[in-house]
Length: 215
Image (cartoon, helix red, strand yellow):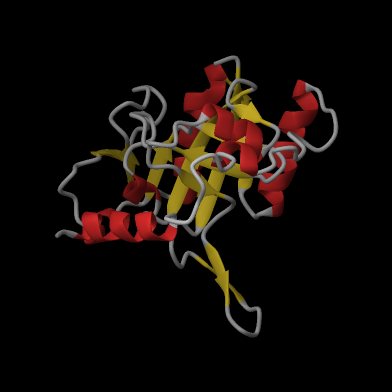
């Protein structure tokens, strides 16, 4: 008997006294909560996202599609980045910066190698306005989860308004639960018992979000 069989056996024993005609789970749990809080137009939803991202200490930028490569180049230069990690599906011209070495995401890259990378640039799956949350799902323009957790500087590009939703329930409707979802609300941070905030403990110390329109 393997671990799977043991777990399933425990589940069966726990459910042994449940009547066959019991209310199914999907009907037993009430789903009558609000889908979003208040009515907002598209621009208001994007503004709320920017406000909540900033509240979580992310650095927010806005631009149109034509200005995106120049803005990313400026952010990498301002940071003094010499290397930038790029997922395989990211558009080629986004991080094309003179003097910055483009690092390809390799499956066999070690944590130590990733830690030596100055910056990482990715897209995202969705952004949630009410919570100021970015969601990555491992798609080709986002890469594996580890590349956004080890390097100290993450630039995340959000296409507005297509990738912006108001609430978490709306996000869940559009996300594939079988994909490796990473939910990011601001740069990595934690607090000790004295409530002293420390950033960069289990992810990037600096998160920059580019809200790009017309893409």
